[in-house]
Length: 248
Ligand SMILES: [Zn+2]
Image (cartoon, rainbow, N blue to C red; front, side, top):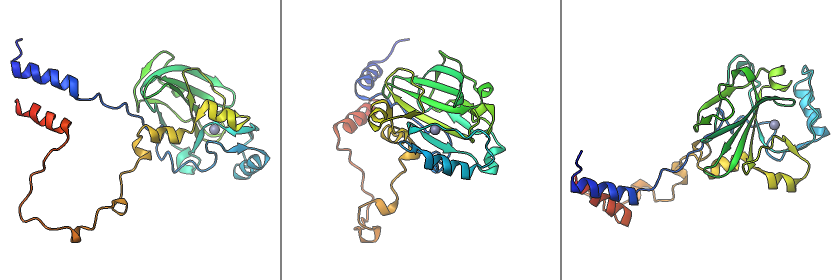
């Protein structure tokens, strides 16, 4: 197939000036922020915390006694409606599955290594092991389903309530610690997952500006233009793209 000169020039320009799309990230479960009601990043699992947990879940035979500083966020699905349904868990970014295991304290656990938007591993705990459709070594895409939450107070969650433990560990190495013993270690090893998702543009953590947040004057005060005004592109990239479009 012969390409015309215009087409060839256009293709060359598009390769040079159109940036690659930013690598997207997404939240791992629905209602991700609203359901972080019990244990956030940095929450101290001390005696007071365990007492509160016992009061909230008095019928749980497996009261966990982990101590330390929580290195992840917990997203809760403990309402009666939540207990009766499967809650889908998704990969937060493109990556490679590096661990699928049944781990004491977690039940089903998935760890994914990401090289972009930066080198981290993401950790998803309390999944139903037999409901995990991905295998070690498998490439996954951002938003791909990697499992469902395990049943509350069962072996699937290692006896825990129904919730997702979601952590973002710095660098490529596997680390499945749920808690750290010092703030220094916490900061050295783990990102705050909410900050990480927000920083990389997860839509659920970056809501569009509401009218109240827009600083332009109210519409009533804006001068009315009798004629529609053609928008002028002023950036060099915009001008170049317009010129590129004019070739066809
Ligand atoms: Zn947790």
